[in-house]
Image (spheres, rainbow, N blue to C red):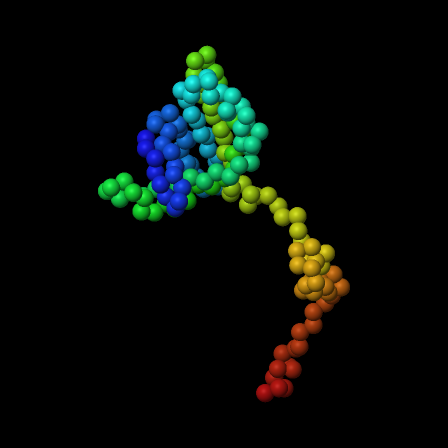
Length: 155
């Protein structure tokens, strides 16, 4: 319910009007979050509608602020990171509730990588690098190791 300054940024308190759904780090599941701001005067509805187009894909980071006795931030490690997905607005005439969902950045780990270990992709990433130049010609070629007798004869 108050502003907090950390690392050159001032984070404004929501005064009890804002909520964030609990972070659930269940093994094997990647869950998103929901942010909600209620009791917003309908006069400010146009501000939310103007920014609705830029909400999707915006980076979202939640810090766990550790405070000292005076209320100053000692440390603030990242507790959750992701991207905003959708925003919804509910209006009752006088006030409105603005909700936004966010998708965890862990979802990116489930997406495949379009690049392969080919010379073409290596040239795309690092032009002039010859690390994968002969990979295609060496695939499916038999590898012959010396026999045990060769090493015994070398003694």
